[in-house]
Length: 301
Image 1 (cartoon, rainbow, N blue to C red):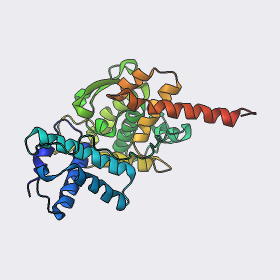
Image 2: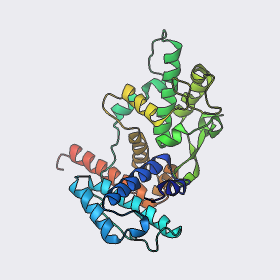
Image 3: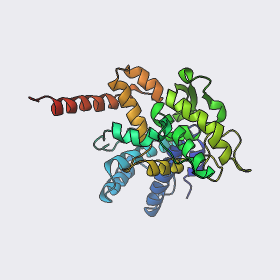
Image 4: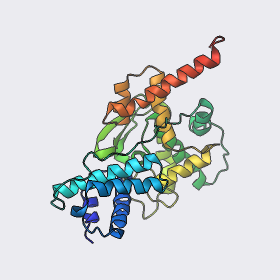
């Protein structure tokens, strides 16, 4: 069979690693399913085949959001197949699937944030800690402060290099990140984040460097390699009293800015969203928080 999935994956170019992984898995699963039906190439697929595939996914009890994501992957693949001459038409054009109920992002409360960030703000620590633990704690402080204080995606934080940060003064700290679609943006850092970065660079990072450490990588794991998303999940597991995804810090960053009166378009720029519609979900979260506060506090609510 000739679906040319590898060529399709190479065409994704500036897409994030997570997007590439999802497209590869989604298109590969469709090709396997179509192969069992005797379909060997993209040019043999019509719209009816795609509708049957989405129906098959539904009968297999895939979540509606997952089916919608797989439909988006197929739209991308068949648009590429048409563009490269592997198909004479695009059967996935306007292919849609129920997206499911939108889930509002989880926002961390003040107690949760204090538990996560207190060590970076001068909380008590055992002075007899081994050097490896000191290095780990200083790194964790800086990572968490950046995720919340600057609203970085986990992949953006892990991809930071030494040249990406500007921490000459606490008042003018900033990081330059590469977001989705290889878009560059410059984001200010909070004073606690700048302080945590300085402490990590002065004491923590030198203790984590090994002979195989990548040149220029800002955050290193215990093996001296560049810090990865799984490493960040482990940081949250150590620090948080309840299961917390790293993205919750980014959600909290956006919602707390809007709660404080920030302009929606400013928040959009800070988050690196290409569409304002993506950012608008946080206005709904902010409104619900206000309504909840009213109902809990007003005697006649």
